[in-house]
Image (cartoon, rainbow, N blue to C red):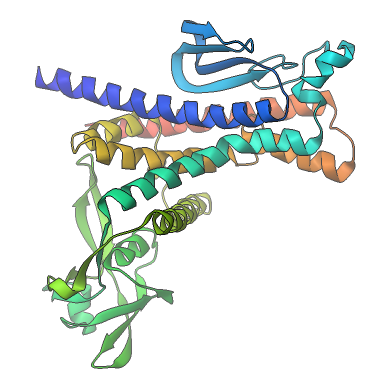
Length: 371
């Protein structure tokens, strides 16, 4: 019974997160399309047969469909969910062209396409800002409280009371910065600058690899310096934010998370990090369920992280994704004429193959991680 409830919570949490994020993403496309006078025929959360829906006064069919892994907005003039032009697009009347997506100028079409990922980033910023504004943020100074016996720091000569100034030349402002830097580090060699008695000391040594567990309880190995944070009250500060400072710091946090994601993905592409670290919908569902166990606030924070990832991935220049459409528009702007229908169709087929292959590979990784 307990296992059944756990699976139920996992599925419910996953569907909640995915439904909200898909709606937010597609709403970005929808609202900018409407602002630019495009008629929206369908707004769907999910693919496949319709479960439930209704028509609004503008003639848009809002619906929820059976396959929850995504969604789409179908504009007037589209032949499919992928926004490919309808065969009868050149036979439209002047009135129909006025509300057709494919008859808008290049800047308008690019804005409509870009709006989906952009709203995902904006949504993440608003979530993080809301959490900052409501709860504040605990900041731990990068001051060494304890040096672990047998750890790399002990051998390197790091002492309790030292303040970590930088790692590999990257400035360290909080203790969390140390963890984030090491999380994306792929070499053992490290340079750590510490402040001791008013003097900066540069230490070069190799990090230690220790056994750890991820949020799902899966065994993993992580690089560690071998230190604990200070427990002195003056080294632990709860920072409270006003509305504007919360928004500004949330924007910075979203930017940093995006850059870290790109860094990790780049390491996988060049072979510095295992491709088995790529995760798919099964792992996202499991993490959503585990996060929900800590309360709604934790689940909403997790939703912000996934929203950043969704916005980032959709901007990749792969046909089928928003970034692929933007790539086509960039080529059109340079060439001053549209790509041929055959070239676009070929690109979409290649893009679909790439996206499908990545989803299968990521899902296979997910299955291997299940105990």
